[in-house]
Amino acid sequence: MGPGRRPVGENGPVKLYRDEAVVLRTHKLGEADRIITLLTREHGQVRAVAKGVRRTSSKFGARLEPFGVVDIQLHLGRSLDTITQVETIAPYGRNLGEDYGLYTTAHAMAETAARLTEIEREPFPQQYLLLVGALHSLATRRHAASLVLDSYLLRALAVAGWAPSCYDCVRCGTDGPHRGFNAAAGGAVCDSCRPPGSASPARETMSLLGALLSGDWAEADASEPRERKEASGLVASYLQWHLERQLRSLRMVERA
Image 1 (spheres, one colour):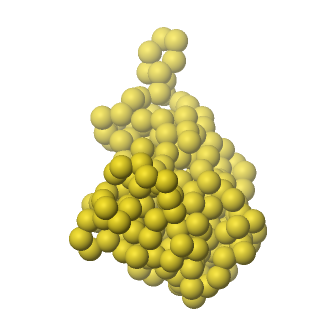
Image 2 (spheres, one colour; image 1 turned 180 degrees about the vertical axis):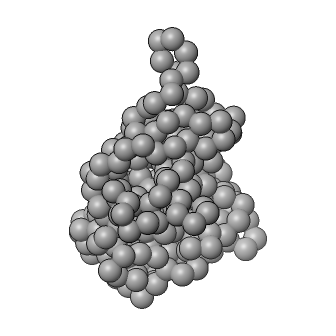
Image 3 (cartoon, rainbow, N blue to C red; image 1 turned 30 degrees about the vertical axis):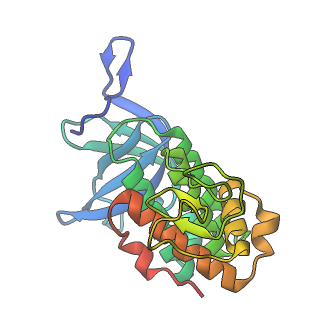
């Protein structure tokens, strides 16, 4: 078991516990089981066995598809917990699975959430709520998928303590807007502080980044395709810098 906290009751560790969760990913185990990786609301990231879910007779196999939000009961185990009950709250996976672009976008969000909550059982309630909101927006097609993804990535990094500066210079604090962006420095940089190799995005792109970070959807929805494409490149580089590796699923996302 990871270094995080175990569910605890008044009389010590509990054997059964219940929580809300998003299914991040699944892996086959043996002939009929699956290992389910969950981001729960109160217990952080949890890996659990769902026994017999690959059989056609399984009562809750379909409820444990990636990106679904569920009410789940688990039995505490030594290395892996065991799922004993599942009720569907929001079957986002069914909707997202019908559209390749939405499906790959959801994968990128789930992989990001998994990376940012790697300490098992350490609570990450803000990350949980942020992911649920992003999946809802994606599944209901409220905004363009690329905007939902980039907004989620920026805000998830901000919750983790890595909020980029999109206006003032991150080094000297000089009022913006500025035409330089450097992922290693932390975002916007003025001409005096600009490190070699910094990007030179358009002013409208920097404004879009600020709107995505703050959740100003009126401005984000009004943005042009060129600004969205440039913003996506900056978000990807910023994410890669702080996670110290590329997301495999991000390379599959359609950025049309």
